[in-house]
Length: 434
Image (cartoon, rainbow, N blue to C red):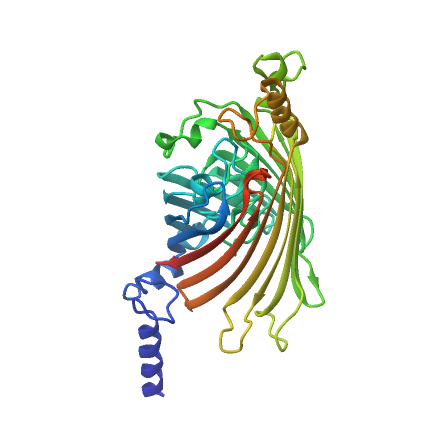
């Protein structure tokens, strides 16, 4: 028995060595230090995501172009109940560093038009290091009530969805991708969130987020003061996480209200078309929108619920008077463990529709009617309609700490501009846990 125990310990220790395929971390267990910290409630988290995208065909600039973007994260999730005896209390701190370029803005989209989506979801908010999370949460009444406060992003708690694709249209909380007063990670905001669990499978939550556009600036990555605040964002959400036919699901319905002023996309202060009057676009005092999301596992593989097909869907609707994109819909299918020899691999297919606000489109048409310009003229305002995104990918779980996901994307009407040729993009996403 002593020999067997010694052998088991040696195998376990070897599995946690740096670069071991069976280790959950690329750098290993640091001689047992990470496991010791985990037992004390300290989870050190280090990660990397790299995404490349190559234009095979189409786009505004039809040259074959490749762009690369990446993200490094460093942080710690601390269970203060384990560490200090504080009942049901969690602390989180995380830094994020982003770098690189986006194929959409450099190649696919008409540079005169605003971008709708992105072939590399990890690119955006500038090449800079930011404080992405700094918060404390506390549970009450046996976890029925939870209060969280500090700096975090809307996407950390509201409209949360999986990110098993490279295209932004299938990745993360969608309202933050299109509404300029809603910020997704890695942009953090001063915020508070109250969650109350109604039943074992249903909870409701409400949040208050400081809307501060200066947080988007590259030199504000570690800004902690409130200078530049323009209003408050208040989201509410109801979440149901049932087990249907012994398979897990999760359904969200949410609504947001923002008190921050926003520029109207069509009218001036006199409620006339600004492109016609020549006056500045008016400032609207608020905006609102809502979303519906659902995720349901549909099948297993020989009764193994860790494998099988999962369907996800989203329908979001935004304030058409202040937001270029009026609505968004998507459906994805992800099959985990498509082969017995590859139980952790995933095969994914996603289709998304990004619909431009009819007021935003009307503004462009009015501007072009006034100027008399055609699409080939430099000062023409591109008329943006609907963009469609399709992605097919296969995620290879090379080791526990390394996933490589080649993908093929099809972008119909990039930026919603019908004059731009549909694009075909080959991508490669690499994710690693250090």
